[in-house]
Image (cartoon, rainbow, N blue to C red; front, side, top):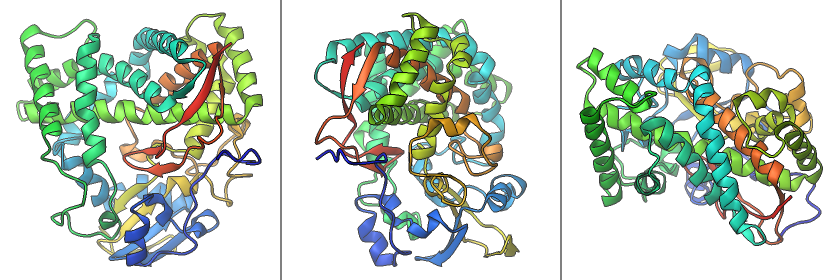
Length: 448
């Protein structure tokens, strides 16, 4: 039941202590993040062993070195690499070699802030269609997760493959949903650093759904090569152009990176938008202030790229949402060094874990860390204490795209609808592929 006396938004109950390997296996069955010890909220580093040595890092100078200055000494850890490579072996998320060097520039250019300004008309159009869809659902409990997922996938599919056909968009989304359902789930065996050849229960890269998704993307790539580039070029066109300049870039590279862009490009933004609407429902005062701001600026139309700078509270709500509920709440790196660094004894093969969920709620760096206070982002935030998109050269290339899309969608929806909590429908944050609610996010919605 909804606890009406709840003074803070829902949060994950962290472990009272560093779990033993057997405790880790049991706890990770229902929520991987509950493996994090509560001490992460008031300590800067915790070193321990659970199957292998690991270091939980909440110390800003050490985080800076792991993600930036010493990035070659701390490549991406096996947990993330194995999850993505199981379905997309040649993708830039897990790769740190030739694939990353050749394809990241083309993909990054596609979602650069200048490209976003041109593409924002599409984002605004999707915000309008999402509002129309929501208007048909208002007056009853609304599955916010489903709403935002459909909306953000429509947006990324138009940016990536210029897919305006609703039937094609639905088919691609259904095929790629299999990835998050069957592949991209953390396992307790990942945390214990069990070798990758040991099967993870519930994780299979050979399902018919994933095979169908591969065939679908292959067909889209082949058809585009026949028809030629779109005007303006989309992400697929940029990847094909990169292939034309370097024949070592294969069609498998194109497919794998297109898959990753479609999956990560909609899932993370959908989660952020869902949690933002929950937080606005949790705090009606903040919601009403943001609605007044949006209605004053937008005057009934959907928000656009140039409106964002006039919507400071909307921007702060998205920033605070990503602090409380970061889409990827755990960064994983692997030590290649034997060195004493910032007081931590690293050995080759150690896991370096940066738990963003705990870092963003640390009592060392944040006042009232569990409270929803968007105004905190009106001031300066200390370096390396807020990293919703990671940091360093491996920072998420879609950071600007995700934020702008979420801000445009949120301002448009708040200007037209009022969102309220529903008794008995309290969300339960948990880590699957991203930080989601394992029982969904359902809100009461009424037109303004």
